[in-house]
Image 1 (cartoon, rainbow, N blue to C red):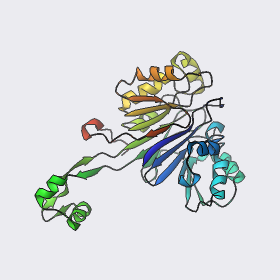
Image 2: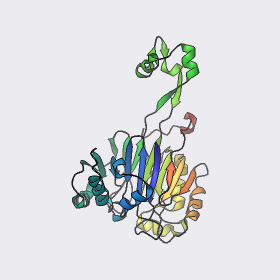
Image 3: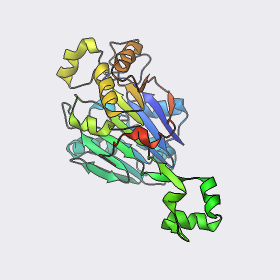
Length: 305
């Protein structure tokens, strides 16, 4: 299963209808929790997801609305007896804040710390790139390797069946039949998470060709000066980012409390991304990953894998 569970969509302060940040990406056998703000543990209960599903926690930066829920989530894991390792990724410059938050959690979780001080791939398929915020911040990108889809009719024509199918997939050829002769390319899917930032190269690299991009949309276009002052994106800038990158689905979030209705922000984003599905996230939304794109739609977007 691949699904994004939105646990909170507020920036800076929660509102009556929006909790602080929190996003759980269910990706096959992994659960990646991004930026658990205050109240994330309770939001997980309301969303019907278990703390035991979390295998990685990814912090973009250590502002409170992106990390103050960490002790509660870890404490719930300890209470539930989670036995698998939990990997915590975060900017190295936030070490003292992360250490303080972890110290508040109940002991008992096999927590493995992974600070990063620059761009790179820090787990299988998990890439980070620097963003442009008031403190050091990074965005995340999850990349599935490209593969191939077998075509049953071609397998039958080539006389490949039973155990030979597995041999073909593992070795690339069986009895003179090549894997590429009986299959077509299967593009790997890509997920990107771009939070507090001004427009920057790192955000462009993260978004490039993403099937799903979660992006902050703190301000409306009319408040562009505020966005520049606080190093945030406007809705139009988030849409332009998605449009340039060929994103399949853009999920807007991290809304300022000044906006009670965020659909106008979604409209501003859509104006810059006519070929992208644009969603204004709401607390407790569940967003299924879209179907795989065909190879021509990728348009060569492979800079990060």
